[in-house]
Image (cartoon, rainbow, N blue to C red; front, side, top):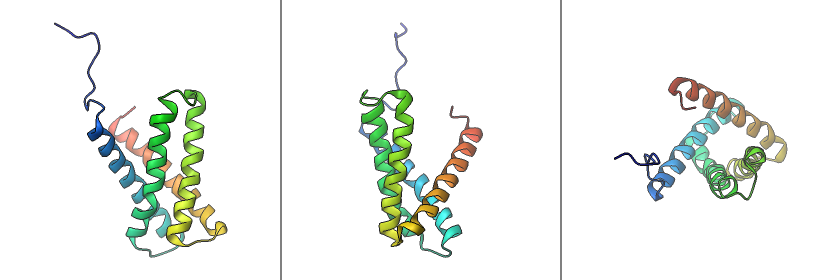
Length: 129
């Protein structure tokens, strides 16, 4: 017989959370490295991997426990998640790359732009939405 609800492909367990975190971390690291190379010049990719962990964790935690749990309304949730993720990105970039606030802001803006462009491209290529 058919079930009333369609089961989730991943089951929503800990494995799904870990894989989502790893993919998000990789995406942020690649886009941050592209932005840092464009803005600073030749930089080691390990710096981007270190700095990308904080915004990945913050964005996933806010989405999971902020929007889905009902702490923040879904319409306002996207804005809250984006703003707090950008702030976390700025803190991580400033600490890892040892930049002043004046130098961190344009790099974070570039990172946001690279992530948005690459994200839109991936959505169009793979048809995720």
